[in-house]
Length: 479
Image (cartoon, rainbow, N blue to C red; front, side):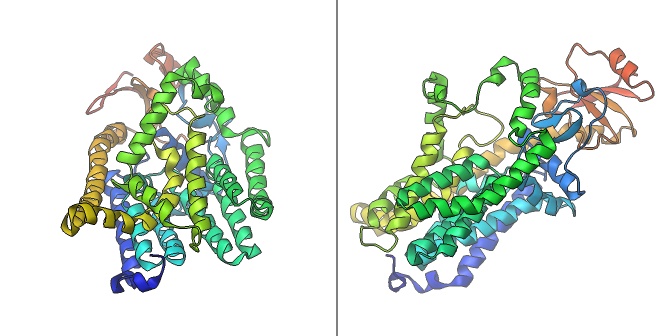
């Protein structure tokens, strides 16, 4: 199975793999632009897009306007200055597209590049045909497709972890120090995007029981950690003060004392609600957000790579990554929100792709032996089609929500320059998006206790409107 001698001629075609990668990339871009309207739906996405706009203009932060208590927005730190609470790596990549008005295209490109890296890695480790299996399993996984069409930072994190995964694969074959150095640099880049994901990937390296495999990547990741510390100092006032801490008081003001709960800690192991949420995430990951049968194929793949197999170390490393992320999830708050519930398990998609590639053939043989070759082919076809259909069902749910959230700005597009809009909604801080510069129409996330008279006194020379949440939104002038 690991040898190219067992591959089909079509499986050896690099052009086929690149063509599939390009097709997936186009699908992600079309979904991003036309299904999601190139609109950062969730507060997380908006915060990242806001920072990318600052970076695109060569800025780290900008001075905040007056009346901060009426301008609070989810996941954006606003005190003396305006900036995102998130690390700089993701917004820096988005800024490349934002500079030219194509921020929405960045993540689909990252997704396609990630696919090509994973395909190449599995090809080197297991052979051409398994590499195509890994490409399809990863590229058509609903979780990967969703992330690659959004502004979430899981896709660029996966890109750098895919580079690290590829470098580790080369190191297991050659023992070359340079591959561990590349591993560390890639983990460092991932740290600048999603620090916890990078740290957990590094923890998985312990499975090799080699001090070199841990120390060298750690040392090579240090410069990137230093960059992040410097960034925190510039934006939040302290080397060890991250954006989450800087935003914490705003989070409590918006969502109450429940928001004060530490998102990471052993207490979540004993919370019935969190235990249920974790179980739900594992179930969704196995049954809804991956191609149906992915986990079963991975379970076949683990024993298929025997002790004498050249890929044995990568098989063990892949299992280690999955275990580390699943264990870490158990000590995290996992309440449902605006994003895919299992998205914090996104890094496990890479090792799952390798294990699926190894387990696909023995699984197919087992099905064929029991039910026949035709049924086996039908199973495979249905798995891919059902995965794509599942992604379609997510789009069917998400698209109306996108329309509703961006509907406010469409309705307000005809308002005069300088208009002030009081957002009347259940959660106004999810809608009052002013960008980093607060120009043109000004949206206020003021509570119900704030009246048009109060707002008029604060903005005496500007027309005042109230916008009421609904489908469609309604706007009326109140002064």
